[in-house]
Image (cartoon, rainbow, N blue to C red; front, side):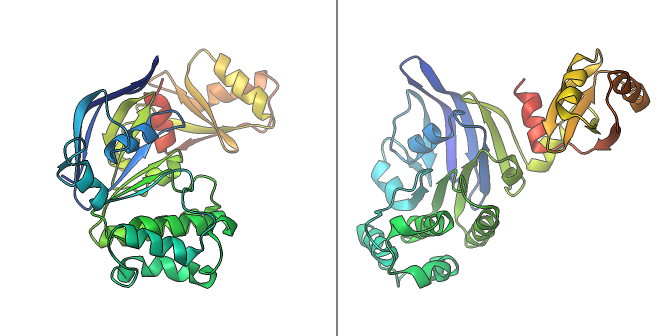
Length: 300
């Protein structure tokens, strides 16, 4: 296994950030840690990259123990923290050269690993890092994390605050890196990105809710799910919440995702109820659950 985590717990004063976390990441796998802000993702990343010490439990990264072999881990992993942390007064090429030197290598030696990414920022190589756009900062940070050819890559919410086009490009880059044999552990609050991983762990309040492939997690949703829409969204949500047979009600874009308690559900009954509550243009259609739906179900 590239990463093995057994019963890791971590607290800060009275706040329990991680509660008995255990999972494994296979070699060459693209594994996603999915959860909202405050779920414990960054704390776990800092433990695995030897920046924090867990209160209890044990973990290995690339077969190195996070306590006893911390120097070896630092030489064999790439870490891209959630906050842009490169030297903003240095240019693109100066940052890259600096990190290559720190790890005793050169840009030329491992250029094949970063070439697909670097060619996108090369036109700005003389620009200071602090003056780059969000997407370009992201690409530069990834290049610096890769320049020493790590075995394992840790990416902590790498696409937060980045435009949709750059997010798409970034995940395409991750897929290409995976094909080169790098194990990737990525955290994200975006449920749509979870579907791009081989396997995911859903985390909430420092606890793992479920670990499986994205499709298997979606398949675990226990009810039939319906898209419900009407002319007044707020009133629709409130009416559905008051409906005696409702199992779950969550806004989802232009629709409300609705699940019913009953084994036999007739949408016509619900439509008549909503229309009796002065809602018009009511539409009820069956839909497929998403990872977000399953997450909300597990987090109840």
